[in-house]
Image (tube, rainbow, N blue to C red; front, side, top):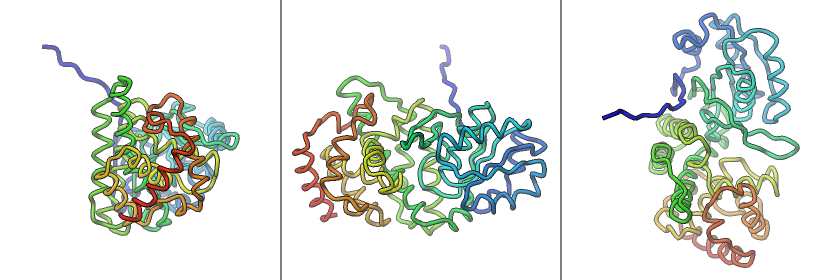
Length: 353
C-alpha cells in the first residue's frame, strides 16, 4: 500500500521562553541559516533597538535597519535596501507591523526570514500573511512562513500589556472562524482541511480554558503557542480560512469605516463573540464572553467607543470585505433593521455573562 503524505511549510525552529533571543546567533548557525551572521536585522520603534544591541555581539556582520513599519511603501523601501549587499536572512524584531514589514521585504527577494516577536497582539508572528496598509486601507499579502520564530517572554512582559491582551481576542476568534468554515462545508460543500482546523482549534481552546492572567509566564506561553499554531494552520491550509471568518470580516469593516477604533485582536474578539451569538451557540458564547470579560477585552460596541448605529453599519458592510468567504453573516444575510434587533438582544445577553 503506498504511503501518501503532503509537504507542509513550517519554521525550522520555534523558541518561546525567557531569554530566548540570546540564542538567536546559535539558531542561525545550527539551522544552517547563516553561519557567519550576515543578516539584515529589521527593528521597530519599540523594543527592537534594545534587542538589536543585545544580539549584536553574536551577529557582528549584521546590518540594522530601523523601520516605522506597517505600510506597503515601508516594506517596498526596505526591500530595496536589502539589495545593498548579500544577506543570508532577514531578522524582523518588534511588534506585528515590524514583523510583517520584514516578512514582505524578505519574500520579495526570496530571503529566509526569522520572526522575533516583542508582543503577542495577533497571530502574524508565524503566519504566511503580511498585513500592510496601502492607500489608507489595510490589505493582506501572501508571504513565506518564517524560517524560525522566537518569542522572548522577557520582552513580551516589558511591552504594553494591552497589546498582549489583544492577542487573546485574536486567538479565541479561531473558534468562530472554524464554526464559519464548518457552516460553509454544510451549506455549500466547501472542503475543510482537518489538520489546519485542528491546529487552529487546539491553541484557541487552550487559551479559552487557561485560568492564568496576562502577567503569568505559563499563560503567556500558551498564548504564544496558540498564535504560532494559528500561523501554522494558515500555512497548512494555504489561506487564512481556519483563523478568519465573520469575526475578521467585522474587524476589516471596522478598519475601513472607523479606522483606529481598536486593535486587530480586540476587534477580532468582539466580532467573534457577536458572530457566535448569531449562530445561537449559547455554550460557546458563554465561554467566550467570560474569557473576554476576565481579560478585560471589548465585548460591546460601546467598549471600543462606537454606538449601536455605527456597529450595525460595520456588520452590514462586513461581507463586502471578503466576497469569496461564506460565514454566518452571509448565511443570515440580515437587513439593517434585523441587525439592530440582533444587536440589542446581543447586548442584553452580554450583560448576563
